[in-house]
Amino acid sequence: MSKFAQNAERVDQNIINTSNQHGLIILGNSGVGKSFLANILLGREAFVHKFSSTSVTHSTEFEEIQIGYHPLAIFNIPGLIEAEQERIDLNKKEIDKAFAQRPNSIVMYVFGQQGGRIREEDVVAFNAINAAYPFRSKSLVLVVNGIPKKKRESDYEGTTLVLLQQLLKGVDVNNRNLCFLDFIDEDDQSEKQRIKEQLLQTVVEFTPSKHEKRQEIEIIIDQLKQAKQLIKEQQAKFEAERDRYMEQIGYSQDLLNETLANQKSEKESFERAIQRQEEMYAEQKRRFEEECKRFENELQNARKDADHSQRLYDLISKDREATQQQIRAVQEANNQLQAKLIEIASRPPPEPRIIYEDDDSSLCVIS
Ligand SMILES: Nc1nc2c(ncn2[C@@H]2O[C@H](COP(=O)(O)OP(=O)(O)OP(=O)(O)O)[C@@H](O)[C@H]2O)c(=O)[nH]1
Ligand SMILES: [Mg+2]
Image 1 (cartoon, rainbow, N blue to C red):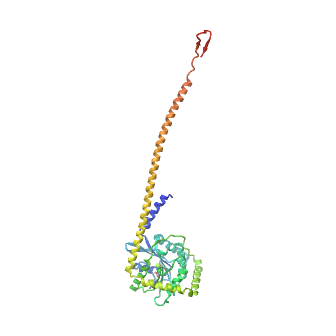
Image 2: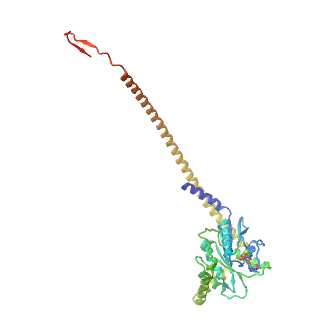
Image 3: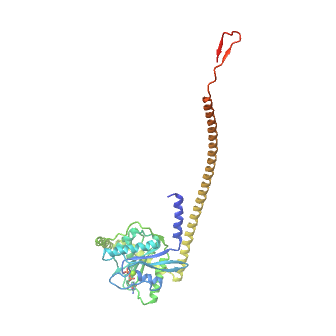
């Protein structure tokens, strides 16, 4: 493909990318509360969620919320790991669909917990999806959902943060992108409002970025046991060496407490979200205009080149015509000469004539 065509394609691509196509892709295993949290963000019961021994969401869907003037698609996607390989493979496809529909997204990965412990399968699924669609720091939010409000240790969050830093490959885990959500009473609207604010205040600090697929999401049921065992061993090692991390845990806990205390009202977080979106669109618009200008310049240059070539072609054509006329004239002259030659060659030889010399009549010359 020519450079010109490539640029034209890039401008086209930008037109697609700069349209208001942003998403919040909520990922995590089955039952961690993805649909429940999506509904809280939407402020209505848009997606089915239930207490169930089998997975609930089986196909990808999304609903849009308006942030300022811009829509954000909130995705409801199946969890990744299930008991049968067939279902896992279907779930992978549904996750692919979400990234295909909104590559420009914020990813929210939800962890469940069992008695406070991070579940191995959640780490395995995280690492598998992250290997397929590398998460970016500026667009990745981590959530630990359903934590009992009262019964946790004072450094539970700090410890979990440091543990996740050990377990999650290739991503930064910090007090800004990690969010702990209480298990709330479903019928208590003020509790739901509190969770919504907490989520929004976290999410607005992040900007959607483009997610490109590097490889297939690799979860193979036969290897799952082994992968989970590895994570279990890492957790046990962390537990055994906990004393080594005490300082880090205390520091992280303080930062998390500070972040929670600093989180502002929903109105302020919405304003912040709008401001972020405006900044993002202004940046995209600027880049798009730059691309258009570059494209326009290239177009003009190509036109100039084409004009120049046309003039050259005209000149050469004219020259060619003059040369052809000359050739025709030379050929004409040549033909005339040939004709003359033939005509001369075909003339009968002249009759021999006898010329007498004046002074001696006995001598003569035959010419
Ligand atoms: N009361 C209450 N229920 C919660 C909370 N978080 C999750 N749940 C419940 O946990 C159950 C599972 O949540 P879902 O939202 O269906 O989980 P999911 O991740 O969408 O699961 P799949 O669709 O199977 O992938 C539902 O009954 C939710 O209502 C919470 O903070 N409080
Ligand atoms: Mg669901």
